[in-house]
Length: 121
Image (cartoon, rainbow, N blue to C red; front, top):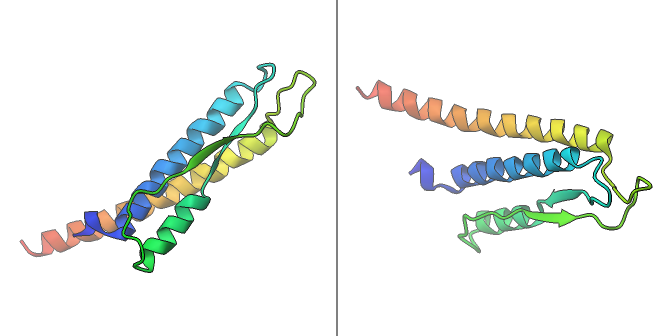
């Protein structure tokens, strides 16, 4: 069935991962004036490796993971805070566009499924 397919699970986990990324970015922006706050980012490397392994049939895992990493290596401000608001704002917009594209893709699949179900009636 469609809901058990790798394609559906990949879209679903992509939406969930981008949602986590949006939360992390907004948390970074909310703390842009907090002394010694270190910005965080989400890494997707494991997500892509798991997806490619599952697509090859080597690994039938459907649980894709994204890891949150704290950037402790840079200091942008004198107070020890390293949140770059321009970069974070751009990253938030990019994440929004990716999230919207995945939601549109998911809606497209549901629309096709609805068309098939309605044509059989």
